[in-house]
Image (cartoon, rainbow over all chains, first blue to last red; front, top):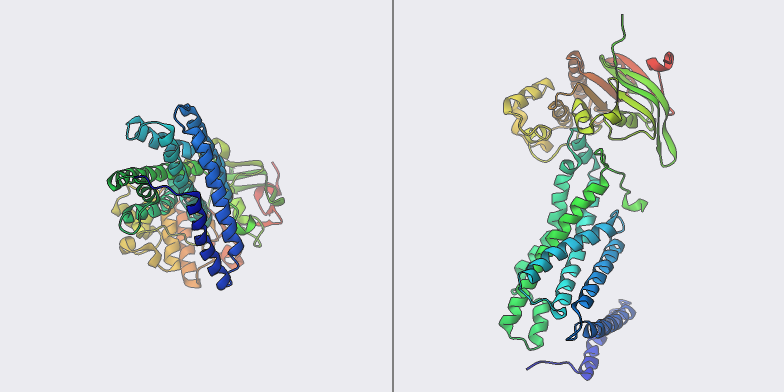
Length: 260
Length: 221
């Protein structure tokens, strides 16, 4: 039996938003307005996306509409990444390149090797999970690497002064940034099932899918996210190194946060 | 008697930073022999001048030559192995003293590393010690030894003793004089006049972006 939520049910669930706003009012947090706006905005966005997805993945519709949707998501995610980490130079282009690389790797494995059938119904959500997680990892890795190279400029230049090439001189800081960006995802993967039930699985079970099937889908999604974050962060880090050093192996000037 | 070839020649070298002229058409020549001290008040552009010599910076105008060759014609990585640099503060890398010495030459054997330590008046037994546990003076000499791994013919010293007490400062000076006696060209930046007098074969002054006292300024070519 499939579980469905009626419009009345949705309206009743707004009580939960009222609880959050009520706590804010009671404790004088001043967040009531923000809570209401956030909830309203999420609802409108989800309804719009739902309407668009209904059109895009409805049976008989060409798969190209789904690919177009994925491309738009890629572009939008890259602009969000740049906005969230303005201190990272050239992030827009790098993020686009890294999301594309992650898409080729993950979608290539999942659809190329027929883990999922390639339909709009599978492509759009899978790509969405991949891009969303890659975006967070991109911001983390880009920010960390830029900070490391700026704060440890002395060390980097001491390495350059010993005749190390920029790639080699930056290697310890690239490693630090990649570890910082990947560790949260590894921790999440480890805790899955024990500490929390991930969203995709919860959604599937609520929608009436058999738990075992939901678990299999969730496992695939977790591995997808792991590969996507690893791919995006390494592309971002190596791409940034090429842009933060000159071809003659000098570290470019990186403004301190206060100068921005 | 013919003049020995210059280590560095600056021809109308200017460096701009945020609209300010850090170096203003500097024309000078730094001889290859002995220790050349460049002194001057802080903010005069001494460090910038030194960083031009191993291409950690490039001039906005003018040309720098190393032993007759324009710097931009030389491979920067090879240049930096020929022209070593010791920075103002000791900059240890993670790991032991041996790890630090091997950064520029991973295949260097323990005997080679012990010889390097004795060249900078350090106990060869320090090789396995964690670098960050050493005193400032010892650490700065480890950094000097680290630079010597690539067998440089020239050393750039950027106020290397400014963070050291008097005793380790004197030890560093003696070590540097010994290196100069081994035919290594030293360009030493300091704002400590007494030190300049102790170590220098010649002293140039950098003031308001101009280098004075240099041979080329006295008798333009």
